[in-house]
Length: 437
Image (tube, rainbow, N blue to C red; front, side):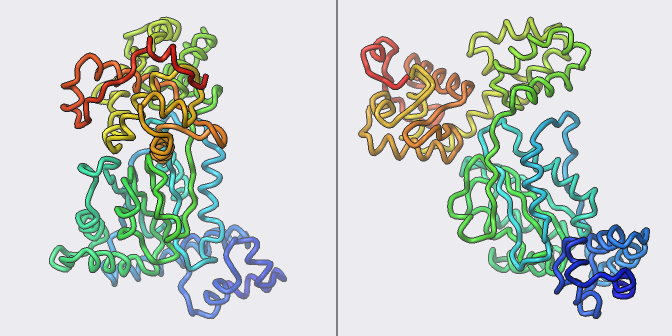
């Protein structure tokens, strides 16, 4: 049927492939019966040939019969998308690139969304995943796993995660292997030939992810992490999507979406100030907007005034979601030296950071300061500004300074937090030190 419709319209395999965004070899195998059509491929054919639901109905029936025979359980584990999702158009477009030529490579496409705490990595991954499913992709199911990073002590073990994944696709408990490698192989076997999306949320490191990756090119993986996941990119066909804070118009739009556009339009200047005081960080923006909605504050202007002190911004919270806690999780995952440097950076004046000023504030040699800055950048606690300088998000800087003050005033608190209580320079001593502004 497909070949008949294609030739009737005078389309060669190459021409038709350009219309449906599948390679000619795949189309040829479907036309000769060597490969079953996926539902997403069938939908593309229906659109390209303008034949209604003809091929989609056939592919759906074939898929249902195959899965019923094999005992496949179609998972649908995606969390609900955020109601107030704004911006990120470029990032959504880059993720769409995962689906372009989805069948044109033998590699499993992997996207790593990485960025600082509270920047909206999970929201972006879930938003895109729902869009992809609504467009007809990943008809065999969607798996969502919280890996509970970045702290090594709390991160989910791949051995346990694989058991959950195997159960989710219908593997009976008695058939789940007792060894990690065997579980990983069984998971790849069950996903072979299927189109499944796997979302791995809040990954700690590459070692945690590698056993979880499917081997079938019809699948795709989206990973979110506060780390850039060094060690993963050389092993898989992965693309990295560093996620920054929102732009000013998007940040103001997010506040308006939560508090109501009428209230936002009543004082757009105050909304803009509030967005900047929240560092345009989505988590902080939503927490601030929710505080207005819950009538703790009646206007953006009142809340913006209260959040003028940086300390007040760190205490933004709604229910059990606390901005400070998001930063603390990343901080606790640092090694002792990087944690010390991080605290010191909170006391630096100005916005730019270099190796010399870092070494001075932390009391370490320049080479150790350089290594710690690289570690902090990998954890998205600082960002590269240029070849010589870094910068730190205002809210993270406020958090680092608060940690330094707490440790100066109460050394025992460092031990309680699992960090060495080292003395930090005072602001008076900093005034006598030449630091980068």
